[in-house]
Length: 193
Image (cartoon, rainbow, N blue to C red):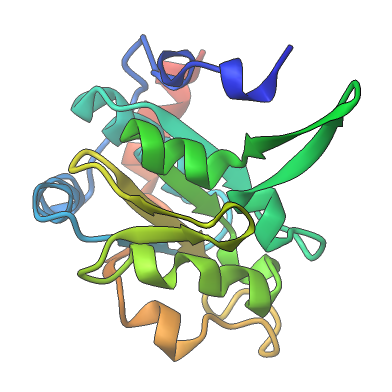
């Protein structure tokens, strides 16, 4: 299957994920989305950041393209690359370029796990330009109004050597997450069984 033939609608969450708000995070996210501002989710592993993104994707009726970041993630993994197809070379968009083109929500999970030279590719998407330069094909993608950039990380829970650069962090509307109270956690567990 051609990687470019993947349709954005394949990333739409059909059924409402259970999410129990603990503050005004839904309203803040919707305001950021409406104003085309990127969102940063901060909190420990397992506190509900990814579930929140699934819920917001469902609520906004936007595709959610999630990338789990890791040490070997390259800019090409995010943006795209040339691949050999028979005797031709074809450009294949990466998940970030697909999200920009289709107006999806691109969620980079655990962003600090990616190499610093990889994360800088999101900078022009996260300021007033909202563009993704693709140097390899000489194209600059303008994000659609529906596109949303969201990232997550665990400040204080990961090595001090792996923190989010200030130049990246300052571009985002930040939402703080923590483990839910026991009453809420019980409701979450009951909804999952």
